[in-house]
Image 1 (cartoon, rainbow over the protein chains, first blue to last red):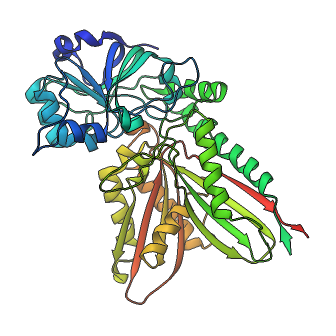
Image 2: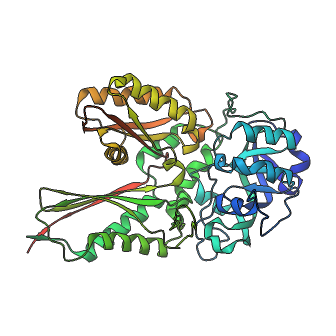
Length: 183
Length: 277
């Protein structure tokens, strides 16, 4: 599969060079979390019970299925990013450099990417068995009791993703079409 | 009276549920083979990897929604509802699927770790057979659901405009190309149930009333014109098919329900002929 190889540890420094619609192959460390963990981390009016260091991190909106014996991860793929929009400004303010999920995001999220020089990536959905093979290691970081909604840390290899909002706030979903590229 | 064997039912239904999660249906496969997007390669590879490993095609292994038609001459010596729940529990316990339910929806949202409950729609029909259809319903496409209590005067144009505007707004998030079910008439609850039941049909199947069949084709064209594209990325097909089911309604109402399924359209059915006892 063609695509620009990107080390997740360097994504923050690279973000302004990433082109809208560009296909990336991610390597390195991702943090998985979705609805329930966001609600606990960014409760709004009260203090969160856990604080994590988000500086330079890439967050993947995902909750994995159960792994097969001997596999690091079960089937895995992006969930709808739009639901996490209310939490995005706080996450980017805390230092996260990228988020990854599926589907379009709202105007608030686009502006947040622009303001904090962050990118939003889209990972393939309905592709979860292949993506499981691209995960080398996975462990729970917090909220184990949430099951698939816990926060996980995953080591990925050749993990495909498209740049859907760039660090200047341009969005693939605002009528700017992705380049055709069959692979 | 006629009977159905509980063990056979559990076994065959369990197998069908697993197949729906790991084997792609021929309609989806055909679409994946002929459309190109940035992810075409990995999407096709996923079809093979899932089949070979038994890993589900999508990590969202959904809530299971059953549509049961039970012959009035059947006498079951077990609780069908209990058996359906148990089959789901066993399948999710013994396969690498995801537990995707929470018991209390508003306050606790605690995951029971068994993917229960399944949703069951049951009706009694004339005959001696037991027919069980099911949808494996992921949360992303379920969130596209919509009910309109339209004015009777809104008519076909009102319906088409509502569907079009709604899917233009939210369709890209439901993993297109979408399979869309529309329920027209009945009461609010009935319209929604019909829209779900419509998803059991296969692409290309048409409503027997030519006016509704024409509406299905018109809606397919309109959704295609939204250019949602594969994965919502704007290229390739946007719609796998539209099915409309209709029912009598009140003089003051025109309920329209919409349900949508993602491009994987995970569903299945088992049918048992009642054995004379």
